[in-house]
Image (cartoon, rainbow, N blue to C red):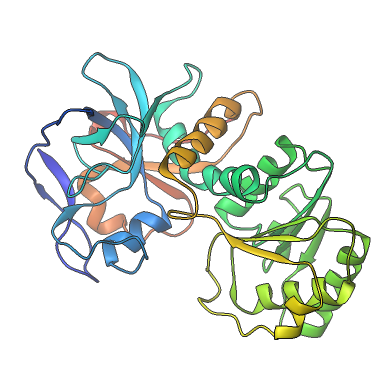
Length: 323
């Protein structure tokens, strides 16, 4: 079969022949129709992500959409290594696939699943959001951050506050309040302080780095505001480390936790994705994407702009937005 293959760390995947997967007891073969390019897929292919095995070669891609041998349309997650999602076929354990809603097109489901899951799992399984709480999303102008605004509202948040560097985009994400990220750290912390003084219950952090430090410091200075603040670390687009004053934790009731592979079980991740996909059509969730043939993987892997969905069958290639 044909597949997108990572041959070594730091190199672009290549489109080539790979061994056919054979299902073992408790597994299914999935005939892949769509697989979205995500930061997780890129990080694993490059060997940078903490979940990477370091064993090459392997087929890239962590999730996707396809059909079982009996024709059922399914979403699947984490195929058995060395097989991946970006191939004609892959092999997946039972419990790591789920039926797709009939009103959700294949490429749309593929592009929504991973970024939507990040906030759904963080809010339901880590922060355990309560109806009526206030959520602050740090990094709301990225793909996952934009979806997080919708997910937070759908799951019961009464108020959503968003941060982001691109002010024009920030004003369009649909938050109740925006706090632009700029070079002036003191101004950023002062703006945050006002919100924390009024009460913020949950922070979803997609950036880490300097902005996460400012949020934690501002929350600590604001003092208690009812329930302890649950700070959920989801992504690290702005840096992998934070130098945090010890007093910020000793003087406050801040709870810091992560959400991702390891802190959330595979069963939990699949459940979160099911929640996103089941709610997507009813909530009219939208996300731009560009579908391209899997054979173009080497020339499109760097991405930029629209999300990319790879399709093994070029006859199904299309560009669209789900509305």
